[in-house]
Length: 192
Image (cartoon, rainbow, N blue to C red; front, side, top):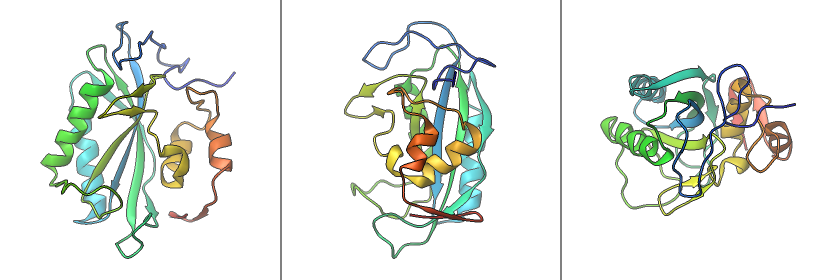
């Protein structure tokens, strides 16, 4: 039987959760984040962001996908992105909201400036919380699973590299979601 997000038989247990994005049992939580950059030396930005995540307390980076160069979404006139996905294990004091706060703080520390624009502007670093175990959350600041991840080959392709048997909280497999997308993979480039 495929593993559910947050339930890997080789490492962790699936905790009980409530609908307000808070965990109730003290166990390690499987988490997936995406990293992206298209300005200010993207490979260096991704490496710096991953290093900053690695030093967060009671959190371990279990795997990181290869870096893919990806065609920009929306605004095609900007530089191509470099994208990656990481699999984390978070200890009992972490919640989805506290991790999101720390990811946003890492973005600021690396020079990200949010100018109030929503959309597809260039960015030195972008860290998105994709999955926090099997939590489902629709809050003002946070939606889990990430609401647009199922539309994005630049998320699902690298996620497949590190968690090919993943099953999402709604019961769909990663392989099924990836097969539903129209994209082209050529070496380390994703066209969508």
